[in-house]
Image (cartoon, rainbow, N blue to C red; front, side, top):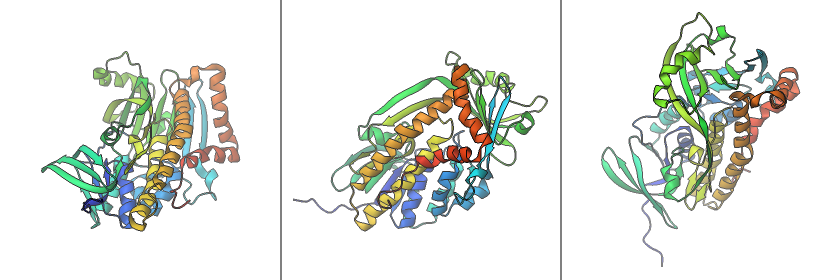
Length: 402
C-alpha cells in the first residue's frame, strides 16, 4: 500500500554553495527543474582557492551562457612555464597548439567564488530557483519517493522535502556523512600556504602560470587579476607551528619575488592537501559531486576541473530523470564514471605534479624523467597538444547524452 503523495518543496536541493553546487543548480534551473542551493556560510566563501579554469571546461560554461561573463570578470591566458629553481632552466609552452581543436584554446583565471557568484546571480533572477545562505543541513533521511531534510537557518529550523539531493558541500560534507559513506585516502603531512599578494612577479621572470620546481622552495605562482593580484602557494614543514605561519611569510617570499620590488599581502591561509574519495557517489536519491565526492591536492588545477565536470555530467542526468521520467539508475552510471575518473586520472596526475613541483622528485634521474615530457611540449607542437589534452580526459558526458 502506497503512502500519501509527497508534497515536494523542490525537485532538487544542492547542499553547498561553491562552484560545483551553483553550476549544477544553474544547469538544472535552466532546464526547468525547481532547485534550491543551501550554503552554511552567510556568503560565498572567498578564501584563497582554485582560480584556473582549464580550456576543457569552457564548453560547459558556454552551454550555460556564462563563459563570456567569466572572461570579462577574470582574464584569458595561454602561457605556462616550469622553472627548475636550482638550475634556472625554464620550460615554456602555450595553448596555441589547441587552435583548430577547440573553440576556446585558452584558460580563464578567475576566483572560484567569482564563478559561483555569476551562477548565483543568474539563479536569483529565476522563479524556479531559491538560495539559502547562512543555512546548515542538520538531518537527512530518504525513502523510495523523497529526501527529507531539516535545515537550521536565520529563521530557525525548517523541514523540507525534495526528490533528489546533490551533496556539494566540500571535503567535510554533512551529506556524505548523513548517508554513511566513507572518505578513504590520505592526507599529506606538509602544510601549504596559499597567499594572494600584489607584486610584480613578471619582474621575477614569471609567466602568468609558473610552477617553481624545487625540493625546498617549490611553488605555484599564478596571476589572478589584471590589476596585479597573484596567487603564490608554497610549502613548509609540519613541524613548524601553524599559528605563526605569517611570521615566516616574508622570509619565504624572498625565494620567489623580484628583488627591489615591494609587495602587499591581500590574504593568506594555511591548509593541508588530501587525496580522498567517497566509497560511492550515489546512495538512493542522494548523489555527490565536487569535493564532497573527492578531494585532491590542487597542483595542476585538476580538483576544480574534475568538480565542474561532475556538475556538467550530473545536471542533464537529473533533469532528464525529474522532467522526462528517465531511469533513475542512470545516476549509477554518473557515479561510476566520475569515481573512476578521479581514481584513475585526477588523483594520480595531481600526485605526480605535487611530487615534481614541491619535491622535485628528489632530484637526479627521477627529476629528469619527469621533466622530459615537459621539454617535449616546449619544443614540439604535437607533443604540446597531446600533453594539453589531459584535462579533456577528465570529462565524462551525462549518460542521457552519451
